[in-house]
Image 1 (cartoon, helix red, strand yellow):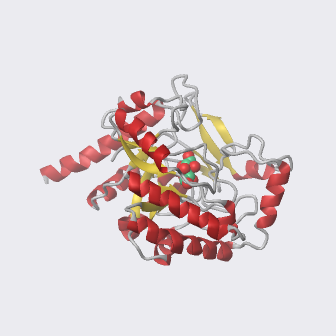
Image 2 (cartoon, rainbow, N blue to C red):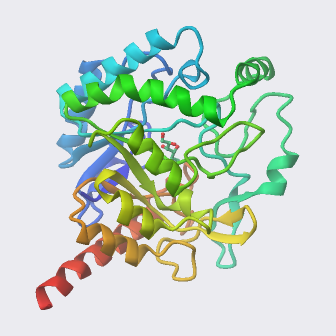
Length: 347
Ligand code: DNO
């Protein structure tokens, strides 16, 4: 189900424009004003769904209900917070939204060091350079840290970081397992497929542990609670930033647990150094044609969305989430998908 991420009525990219992209069918969205830890209200989810459906599209996935830090570091309030999370999942299921993506990255979500990296053709894209990350000074808080949506003051950040002292990868896995044991049965019962988003980039940053960083990790996650509802979001760009990760092998091994696909491309410039190139770049790290074929052959029917695009044609907007380059990405995905069907018809 070809989908596009939409940030709600304040998104500069309107639902009407998204619906004009050929073959576009679904919307990935969420209630972005609700703080982590609070229940996502059923009537608000219903309203959002109605708005999306009025544009002729389906609400194909929630991205994301944030997992409260206490759940991740295993704080004293976690049971209460997990209950609230379960309630949001129930509400989603009752409203009829089939997929939920979430992540388990401590404190920071996706991270880049430059949101306007200029390419030779004059377009700009997101990029990550490890050495530049090391130069980032967090002593004043997160400020306008590239790639990071929420802002923390210096005190908040210090407090949070202190909570993670002693939380190593093993402890983080334990906390993830604890969380999954509570939410997977609820998701299963209410018809929601969970899709964990890999860590982006898939390595530790700012000294914090990151665990969803490899094929083995994804496999381990699936085995922690062995239910079809406990799955993954195959984010080709996040995983593709590490050339050691074989995206096709992941589909081969865990294809039945891939519930959501973020399709994009990256190009490495060195160790832990990459920029986000256009979707169709055959010289990028991500073999999108082969990935789409593998998904097609496995009968993948979940939402697939173009991911971060470059800023092209003078567009201004949310870095990675403009209309034009993502629309090109969507059309590229459509072309690849259609070609798989044609090939099948001929053979
Ligand atoms: C970035 C997104 C991520 C993603 C979350 C999922 O553009 O792919 O922020 O939504 O990690 O929980």
